Image 1: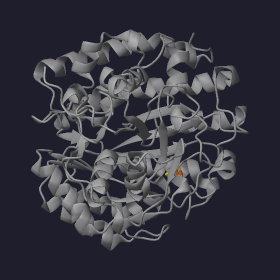
Image 2: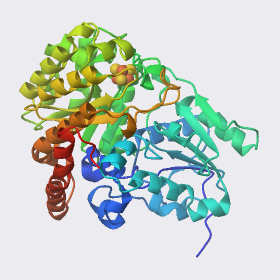
Image 3: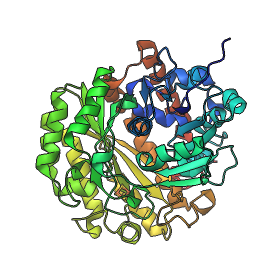
Image 4: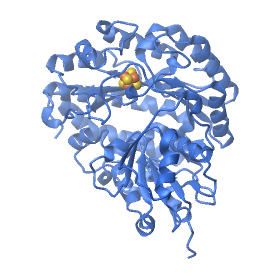
Length: 500
Ligand code: SF4
């Protein structure tokens, strides 16, 4: 076979990141499943089917962060001949003797986000995402040509201290410093092992040159609420100009994406300085995107406090998007994190603003009532085991979840993990040994909640899915099997016993 010279800078990721997820990005969660649970081909077929590839080995869709890095390299003067967003199944067309840098974007390369919960509940070894990431790093073409491997993206911190053959870990934003880092690597100058990219203003976040997975379009970055365990908290909040956002929407629609997800840490803060939403700008953004004609529109993250403060804004967004008429629901990620006002005060003192910390459970409940009325689907996170959390705090969180049981959604209880560069960066993470019976009861309750709503979620989500009828039927079957399989763990944990 003819040896390809290779592109100078290859941007890529493993198959758990470079997937269409059948149009349902939530299927990507399956990548935290132990690899021993399913044969690779079934996993890939059902949960992480590859994105389409072009003739030259480039990927038709890529993670939004990778598209931003690609755009910043092109804007900085690298040519199209030098840079490729490569499909992981076609690296033979991208990596060759002339390749100097392989930049890998990843959200969870070592599977650390939910690994301990999964390991302790199911106990079947490493997850798909870690296995696939390590396979990519050890790809024969990378071994043969020895380009420098740079890992970036939200999960890059997971690689710190891990001896997995990565040359550089890039933390923070890529647009600012990555092009110069590439130049230094190419000139064989010294580059530190850990690089910290600085933040760029909203207007300097570049427009994408290709479509993104899930039709994700970034509208802004950063969050002013400053929760102690959260890395976006370390970033200054800024937003992109409307015309740049619309350009990214157009690029996606032109490439065949039908669904658009507007991404930021808090959609309601678009165009504002923080606490008080700029209603006019938010509605203008929603209307302008809607006019471009996506089949569905969702937002990635919302602050419960902001919704609570301006419930009319959520209703207006619903009307413009056509929730209940043009699309059956609208989904959003939210952070409940805890039901304990004491823990909120300790680690998230701005979380409820402009509301009061002491009203947090009521704020959450009011928002869930509104979501249900407006057919919004919340995917919520809880953080278990934050420093200082005691029995009473966990019970308060459990009581909060109990009060939400009839509202449709998903609730993900995550063990507190220390992330470098956060205010709690130096503390120890939470593990099975630290868990109280009340923690297991809470995890069991969340599992109960999720299993209860899974069928409805599957039905609602199908309007975004591109899976074939056969794949759809298989996914329904897997849902049922998961229900049976997880039921025994759920019952045990609800009694306050560890799952294993
Ligand atoms: S509100 Fe959410 S995004 Fe903002 S700092 Fe807290 S956890 Fe992070």
